[in-house]
Length: 165
Image: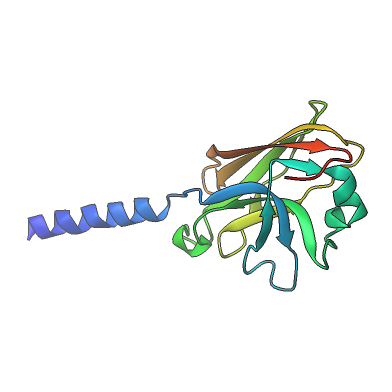
């Protein structure tokens, strides 16, 4: 009986610990579809490491209007949120990001929740930055203890007047 109890307790610790793990599935920069179901499924149209800001701007990609509904964005994809709930039934993992602009300035987002399917995304507005190297660092944050882990870094280049890749 004691052995059965120990096995059960060990199994519970394994399942609970395993359920709280967060694993990266994808991260990138590119064009995504922003439609009425954007929060239910991440639809990536094109990934890339070099982007023509002039083309993106002129074709409406920074406003989510490229070819109708495509948005220039960054994304992070992990497991479905129902796989990592805390004792209150709330997803334990949130995310935040730091974007480093070509001139070295940075922006730190606040903690945010993933969409239920386990992804996050945000539109990239290049503003006056026409050429240079950008970096986006993605972090997951434990809602209960504020533990923060870097999970992905995406680096991309922008040009002015050259074709995107």
